[in-house]
Image (cartoon, rainbow, N blue to C red; front, side):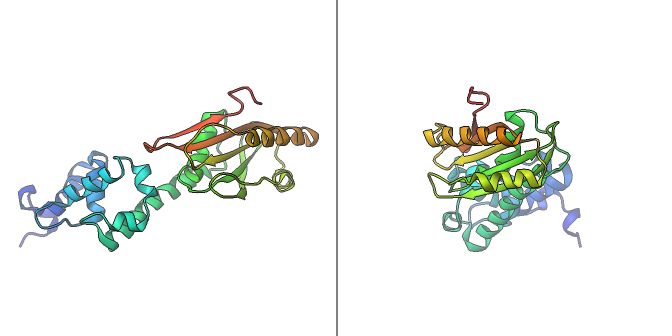
Length: 237
């Protein structure tokens, strides 16, 4: 009797073909739909698991970032998904974000410019439905000493306590800092409040000889693409 791994491709059920492809060709050769199909495991009568996976992607405009923002009710409502498969998808997508967060926590990382900083902070801020304000504390050559969430707010604003920010900076013995917050609305337009807090942090840092090197605003647009506004690159620092 053939075991699971000795079947030919034609003998595999539709639900197993993405797994066979991964085993024979490697995970990098699978499409997003095929990877999702492995998580879903089975399709519907008259519809293969890959077809169901394609419908999952269609529901998120073929964006994995948008898919990661869908809640349990949205995912489980897709025909062929249901409650158990929805939780599996949510768990897998959350692990992906956390993996990026671990990469970003590398204490040997050196941040040189706004792009580096954007890549470092995106896993933490991009898919939130509320505003958060974070600070990253750096050595004299830009090595990351640590990072802290300074505040968490609503959908349109979050307060920033400069005393908390610079207390952490002193604890890390930081020479400079970079700060970032997100706009859940998807807009990159900075407000007067954004400009004002940037100025206050910069001026307060000068008194303590802790330079504000960068402030970025991170957004996730309607197409699932992340982007940012740099106060340094646009002449505000």
